[in-house]
Image (cartoon, rainbow, N blue to C red; front, side, top):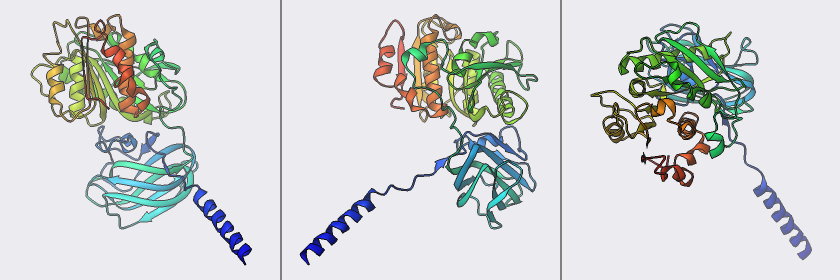
Length: 423
């Protein structure tokens, strides 16, 4: 009897150990963020389909006012979908279906309702396919259909945006170009701005969009040095020429928004090399009046998630409302837009934003030309936008912490440094 008891105890312990060792169920991955997305319609240029998958709950897709309407995301490859989260704006769907497809043509319904409630709806579903769509058949309001976010969860989706970028190092970030191969594309019909040249990664994947805006009397050439640096680190960069060389900061802000709208549209369209390349996240870099335009875009256009105003100029303007991460790069001997006149007061007033302020030797043109130090200025700009547009924390140490301190404490390189670290 004693032997049987001992054996039973041993078996019980073994079973207990086996139970403890069983692996937990894998958590579902967010498959839809930053993926190519299309829709039946958009209410206006400020509510594109891409806004529903950009990870920003301040931006939204909105359709025209009519039934039916749909929003479709391409996961890249066949995936197993287990959950869909709909984050509705006030204009919600009373009746809708969640559908999945292998080819974007033949659809299988995973969920159907005629009693939609709006708000945040979390739907447990089960299906496999590459394309997932919301098909709205009855609006809950007189307006269209509007989603802050359309989130598809599961396993086995396509390559996340920005993947394939190796770990950054000081040497790689200070090199003239990053690890990705790039190409250029001339925008055929600029709308709302003068001209545009897009530099983009040629490999697979989708990436954040960045608008480059020159200053007074400036052309695309002024910030051209930045375009391949950014693109080769995983950004789709549109380098803008203005409507006229003397456009004021307010006009440049509007042109930044117009260029972003067209960049997103090219990413959503087919038949051009940017198709599927732009993931919906947007940033901007500008010099002088273009830097003032960046601040205006951050304040006025909710689609933008980060900005880099360099030697920014915009007299008598308050930007305390700006809450997006902002990197001010200024020049110590600037007679036109000294940091103490513009950037520092703006930095101080922006109490709700993550901020970085770096002043370097040179005159007003120091960021436009790189002032002989394109390596470090490029490193800072690439790191800032990688952190805030792509959420890539690998770039954080170059802005906060010991790695950053080698630059911050070099008085021949940096004459003033302020930040809200840790980011």
